[in-house]
Length: 305
Image 1 (cartoon, rainbow, N blue to C red):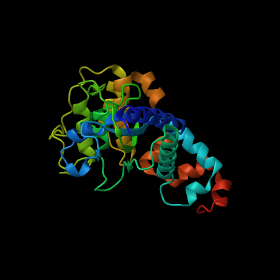
Image 2: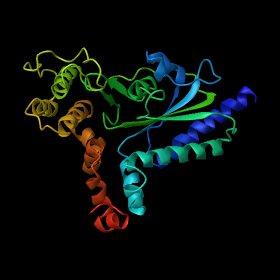
Image 3: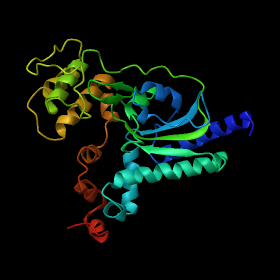
Image 4: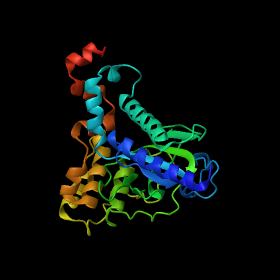
């Protein structure tokens, strides 16, 4: 197959994949050169295959804003059994189904030959298929990886995005290198986020159960100055530094603080997930989904009383 035709197939495939993913709520799918991501990760076990393309292999980072949750809730209302059967994580299964369907449709629409290999790696895949999703989002130009709070911060949606999967296919990737995304979080905020994170973690560990980030303060009794933060952000930061709840809300407030600081109050409200989505993503409690589909449908689908 000549190079011009291969390039044309790659372009059509990328556009079709983004369109089909967006129709399923995965609205932030971003193409990237696999080699750029591989250069950004020191752990060779977390690198992605480059197949037959030495300089740029096509990858697509599958991500979403708050657009995904309404698609999911509409799906489980149509098919309540999806919640009660097939495994413990119905939301993750819904995302996997959406990715697989989109990939198949995009391949067919773009005329990708059957012998062209593609791989899908989910955000929770264990080694040897684990992907450093936040570093990938940064390398792809989608979102800045703020290591003070371990959040990926998007220019429009702030930290209210999710990174779901990486698709890699044996086609040429984008020739251009995106600029590193700037950090929308004000420079005065990371010290506050790092202090709060250190309060939540066992001594000697970090968010990913690895050594504590260098930014974590050693003295948790010392509150960094609030200079440089606007009034709404200062109010949330003061709340964050107050007594802990001892549950998922202590993690949520870091996201709310980063959102208000980077987007402003109105922007943060528009980007924030629905309350039921927030609770479900942080707790995975089945009662959230039970409330969405209704008691009668829950019981008819075989849900526990």
